[in-house]
Length: 75
Image (cartoon, rainbow, N blue to C red; front, top):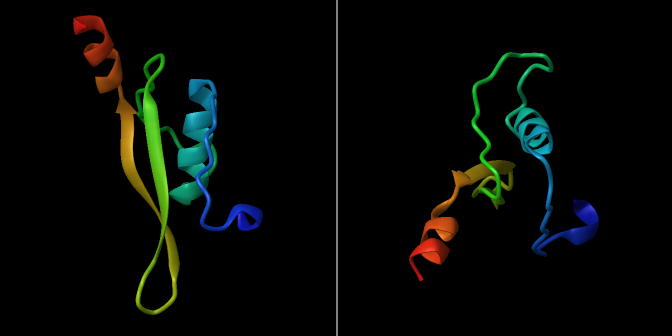
């Protein structure tokens, strides 16, 4: 990610990749049983924040968002 500092990166992936990303960015213990639902075509959005002490922290902006599918269906 350091090679893409300040850029937007899009991953199109399976649910297992989303769960692995959560494990990594939330610093969860590998193998920890979690209960994140990941629906087909859902959007998960992470953003890297830097605080006033210059510490970086990944923040989960949205998870399993399927609102774009509902908007398409009603058009």
